[in-house]
Length: 228
Image (cartoon, rainbow, N blue to C red):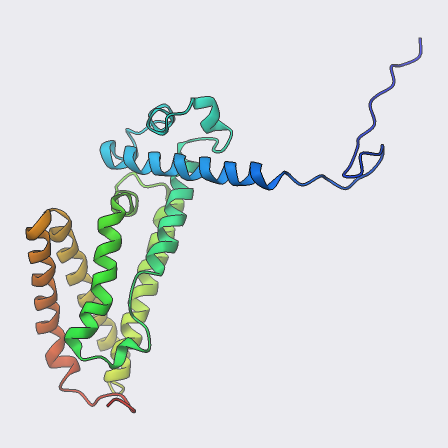
């Protein structure tokens, strides 16, 4: 008996043998992006409530109001969800600090406002960031990305200090930058553990501590060239 004829592949033209793939409709792409965002928001809530290890894809699907099967259309497992969420949070975090060239000419108290306020606001709005970045059970890729982020911010702090302290040995700049970042992280933990007016009060205390540490170092040094 002759073999059954196999259907020929059709491409964008609809003609047999055409190799061009038909792109998915824009509406379908937009719907998929909305679903992914919905799942990531749900994952953030679950990770904050239970931690990464105790979280499950079933719990994330339930939080998102979808079936587990729908979740698996977009993510193969919990780690893939965490990695995507971590990547997006780290992108937002990179945009949230105010260590820019324009701000380096501000008086120290205003510089601290410009740098710290966006970072504090970001952590308030994205509690899952701390869960994923500092948790003992964080997936390896996220931990590595956070280490890279940490080193990048230390480098930016060192660059800012070097503009005020051009003759300071690199090892001393690294030491000052490391202490500055450590003070910020410790103060941020206290800020986030409180609510309302107490949270604001702890934010003000953090700025006082950082000002009193940096003021003798920065404000008594020669100001950068071109500073008013």
